[in-house]
Length: 316
Image 1: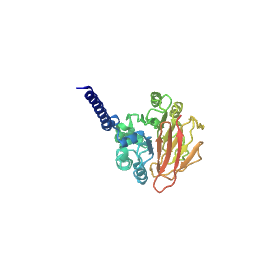
Image 2 (image 1 turned 30 degrees about the horizontal axis):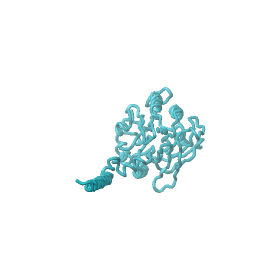
Image 3 (image 1 turned 120 degrees about the horizontal axis):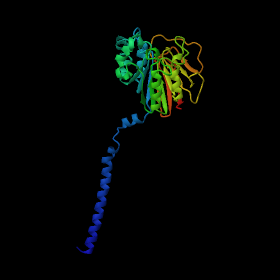
Image 4 (image 1 turned 90 degrees about the horizontal axis):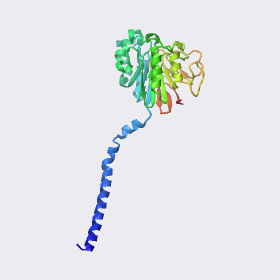
């Protein structure tokens, strides 16, 4: 081959290789980019969104299920983790009460519900109806307290029926467990829920000092939110310490959400210090949107009612 022919062949070879390389990158980029991230668009949206935590207590009363059905309709439209904060199936928390009253209403969301027991669950020895209905979802059947994570939040479900669970004092088994759990899960945001509130302006039950040792532990660990039920109303408190002193920077914000549907709205007495919002004539649920370093709250009322309450808080 002469020099001119060789030069022409070399030029052709370079052009051919360049074209093949260009085709490889164009086709390859199209063919292989999904393998680098095979998450579907819908899954990406869910993964990147801030999780929702929604629920209430004092829910399904067998003599009148209208309130429980009203709040179940709200939960049905709100995706996310459901909390059920005690007194879930009236009158006695029996197997029949759960099957016939809680089941048709909030039982529709059982697969995403994390419950805690209330005093009515223990009208049945060992809260047996509650234990049978929820099974492993309610934790150890002899204790009914446990913890889990939702997004970047650590969530603690406690048992405020202190006499039934070996006490709630600082040296009780539950208090020791709580201390260890908080040490083992040093999350940036922490929420606890249990049936009986330390602070409440409700006349029927009001504040329950027996749970104060649990509050002490939560407060010193930097917990952010506590949710309770027991009084059949809704009440929101400003951040405060376990002694009821307002503490905007480091206090715990408490919500009483006994508005789940039990057909007996309760009246308020003299408002307790730091009580910021109250309602005693509306069934509804508390919806929390859990951001990595903050939270939004919204009380969602039953259809036809206008009371609502909303705001934003930051984690410690």
